[in-house]
Image 1 (cartoon, rainbow, N blue to C red):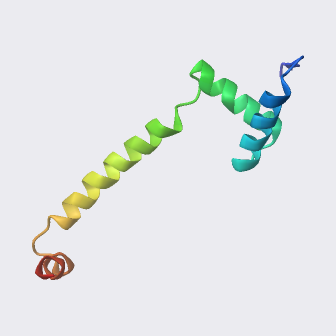
Image 2 (cartoon, one colour):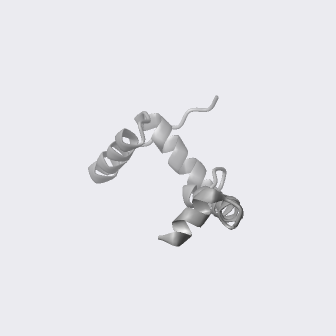
Length: 79
């Protein structure tokens, strides 16, 4: 696998990348690779994935909760 060495990285960038890696529970190397993959379009944006999941979940739940024969649904409507 190829290796990339970054030279003259600003301390502020290194610090931000390190904090981001800790927040995402990744190594500094893993975080840098992830950022590069996102920047090049090799990884989908997390927001796009979440939006698709949310849409599918909402549609699924609306089918369940629009069932007028559901006892829980009818109880909630009474309140």
